Structures are given as structure tokens and as C-alpha cells.
Amino acid sequence: MKLKLVPVLLSLFASMSAQASELQAFIGVGINDGVSSINDGWNFNPSVRIGANINDNHRLYSYLEIKKELYNFVASYDYLVPFTKSGDWRGFIGASTGVQIAESSKDDLILGAQTGINYRINKNFNTELGYRVHDTRSVWKTRNISQLDTFYISLDFAV
Image (cartoon, rainbow, N blue to C red; front, top):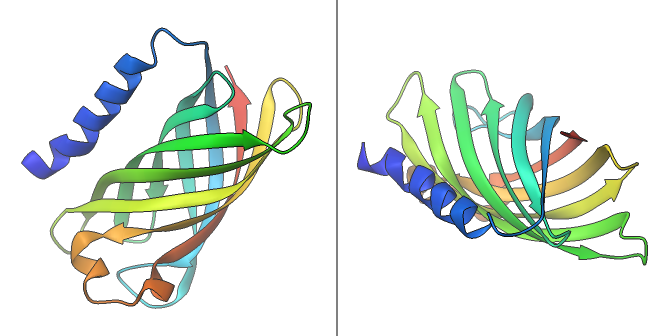
């Protein structure tokens, strides 16, 4: 139970510190392409996410990734850096923590990082291409780093 509370407490702390800033909430969907910890093949896994952009340079969000026998609930923070004067193209780098719930094994803590490129289509839509390196603590110890990567694409709608 303690393991499941860590990501929730980190998310609450981060959201409380962001309350005084300008927030733009969003919801989104994505497709992840990566190696599952249950099998060694490539998988296309859907995900849904909800979060907020804070003052155009910070982003907090949570996502639920659905794999065959796994459910990953992850909270992430990203620092966004504009590539253009308009701010439509932005690079980002961030950290993640969460919980992996598995039907066939024990639940475990997820830790990791992500980077990528975000494009603002218009004031309501963003799309993103990213790369994640993270997995559970128990799996990380038994696999090499090249097996932990995941590429993803997402589409977000500002609410």
C-alpha cells in the first residue's frame, strides 16, 4: 500500500505548488510502441492522459497505459523549451513515477524519464512524439537499458 501512495503524494505536492500559476488543462489519447515486461515482443498499447500546462514551460500530467496484462498509471513532469518564436514547436524533458498493476504478478513502482517534441496545431490541439525510458524497479534490475525504451505519439485537446 505504501508503494501505491508515493506517486499520488508526489502528484498532489506538484499540483499544489502549481495552483498560483497560469494553468491550461488538457486531455489526450496516445499510442505507445515498446517492449512489455510480460513478453519480449513489440506492442502497440493505447493510453489516455490528463494534465495541465503551466506558464508554457512546465507540464504536469498523468496517463493510463493499457497493455495486455498490465495497467500503468504514471504521473509525469516535463520542462518544455520553445524552438520557435511563436512557441508552436517545443522540446521537452521530464521525469515520471507511477504504479504498474499486473494481473499475473505483484504491483510495482515505475520510475523513469522522457523526452520529445511537442507541436501546437492551434490553441486547442497539440500533438507530440516522444521517447520514454522507464519500467518497474524489479524489471529494471534484470534487463539492459535498451529494452526499457518506448516511443509514443499523442494528441491532446485543451479544455
